[in-house]
Image 1 (cartoon, rainbow, N blue to C red):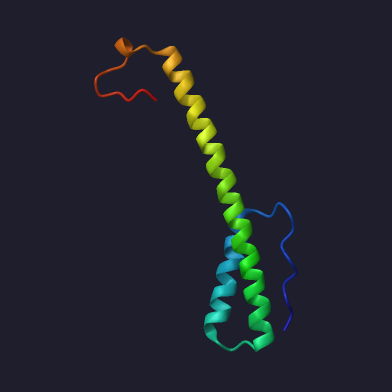
Image 2 (image 1 turned 90 degrees about the horizontal axis):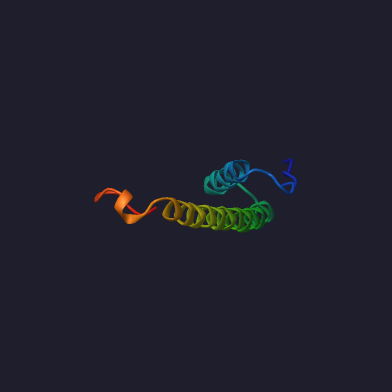
Length: 89
């Protein structure tokens, strides 16, 4: 059985998630040897770590953008200019 090579740096989150799903399905079938199962598990753990890292970075970017948007919006609008139902961000 041909084994997939490790993911290249910078591979997209979506590609890594797809590969992780493939590994899960393959392992759930239960027809892998012990060695193949361990290799698949190791690759899956690595992918989970990479995906978690990518999601963490995305969260940081969103927080920075949100904070910048709040600062920019509050600097351009005073409370009197906002409607009663409008949030300050």
